[in-house]
Image (tube, rainbow, N blue to C red; front, top):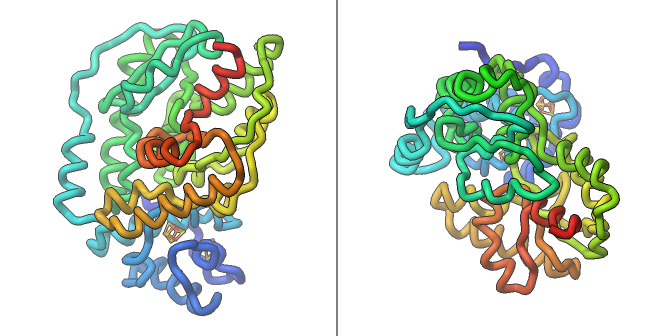
Length: 340
Ligand code: SF4
Ligand code: SF4
């Protein structure tokens, strides 16, 4: 097993300890205390951070040196048996999301869009935007990044190489296709950031859906009818692993005439949708986060609440709609601008 890639010397000499000082869920008296806790984590010792962490992924983005603080935190949680969720919940999820071995070879053509484990979303792949695309979906190609929320790096190490092998063997290899559009940015985060940090080989080129959509909008420029709407964006935890893709999203919004309104809880200060603490059975915290997010969106005067992650959408869509905003996925908003 390859250890998580990180350089302990960078932390020893780090002056800002941004990974912990910027955390929105754990408070420190100052950088000295944060540094003490960080060095305990690095040294494999108990730290209160390991117990108080919401698993929001944000410290991965906050570290200015890309020193993988969150992946290491998960490693230590697992080694010390500190589970963020009750053990029966973890066991049940492990069984439910396991590869089922029901995959069969399928010839694919055109652009191949990985829908992860969300068959209910394959209807999003339609119209000019995804013309000629093939979708692949199911638990046998589930990206497995969710185990970062459950202190299960061992499951990531065990399952991710297997699903990469499934993608190549059952779909891409015989069709001679080497590019995979990741509809869910959790998949993109797995095949780029996680794969790098955990030393997992990826034999295909992952493409984020934002990059694909932005490119298609250039080709379909004549069809765009600017929406002229204000939108509140709910940035998901997984985007913390691939923050550069957020710029491609801004380009998409600009191209379709959607104004991403400034929110207290967007970009670097995005707040968890509430779905993760709900899964951890921390309902009070989940309710608080849902409330904070929706109040914040309402204040902006936005018409739409735009989601990238289907799990965020499942968590917030109902209440967002009840409070008068239209919940929608990025690709569906783009389809409206294309008149489809
Ligand atoms: S992980 Fe990054 S931000 Fe945190 S102490 Fe180490 S170098 Fe500094
Ligand atoms: S994952 Fe989120 S809650 Fe946990 S330490 Fe990092 S920033 Fe804080």
